Length: 78
Image (cartoon, rainbow, N blue to C red; front, side, top):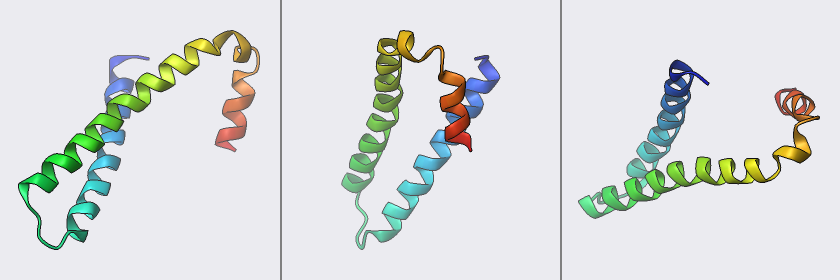
C-alpha cells in the first residue's frame, strides 16, 4: 500500500470517528472539557488499537488464508 492509499484510508477512518464524536457531543446536555477529553481518548485509543489487533491476527492466520483470501474479499464485497 502506497502513501496515498494509506492517507486516504486514514482520512476515511478519521471522518467516521469524527462524525460519531459530533453525535456524542450533540447528545450531551452540558458539555464540559472532561467529556471532550474522555470521548477523544476512547475514540483515539480504539482507532489505534483496532488496526494493531487486525495486523497481529492477520499475521497469525496468514498461512491459512493466503490461498482463499481473494474469495473472502469477494464475499465481503458482494
